[in-house]
Length: 313
Image 1 (tube, helix red, strand yellow):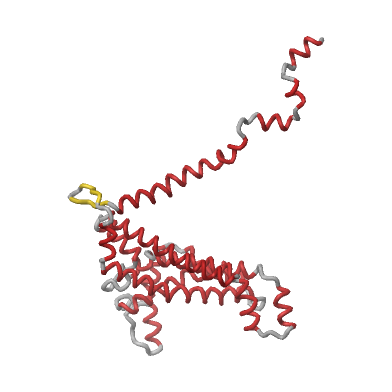
Image 2: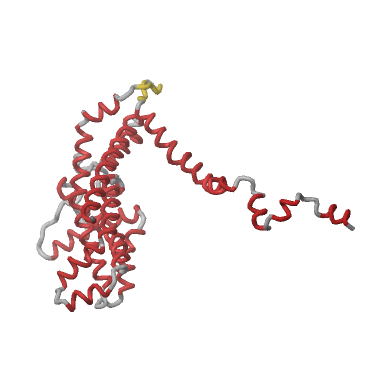
């Protein structure tokens, strides 16, 4: 009988005394490696589709296609970029649209979010959905819509202005009005998205703060400025940085509405990069523009983050 028991359970005495769960964990072999095994697919995808393209683009920015042969030219593309007047035109157009459009869009987003959060507003779900719909509209439909609206000949906007006695405005063919058209299109497209982000942040502000302020005699503006705006600060930081990055990369709206014209008045850095890369096939110079744009975005985002961080303290 004793011989039979020794045959069935031939494990060492130390293993038989160990709890079952502990034996199961030790059977994996290297439990400390388990988290890294789960992360491995993500790390491989990041290396293949993020890090490698970045490094490859940097290498391309140091080369130039000469007679069909790729040659290493060092920093020549960056030196050429620093002396390129068209790049500064594109940079100026982009910064101008950024300075005008982003504050306008964020201010409208705050106003809409406060209205969406008000108990006085009827059909709130309907209005929230209505203002969020533009963000899901495709680029083609978006471009066709605003081309129909701002067409200088028989556009719907000019028809409406003519009905009240205002002459036609050259929306897409005049340098000044072309920029205004792009600002209006972007504001219509992205304001609802920011309003929904602010609305989510507003709903995290305790209602007791408003009730206590009202008991203390604070009016509506004082409650908005001293409770709502500080409560919105995290969402403001997020939307300011995202909107700045998105506007500095602006490509869709000027490409569809004006194609960078008239006379490069709406040429942005994103469009200039596209033209050099996919119209003139100068990939080295296009990569240098991309890295310059990345540097500009990083510096501006860091400044915004530091400013908001200082105000939060």
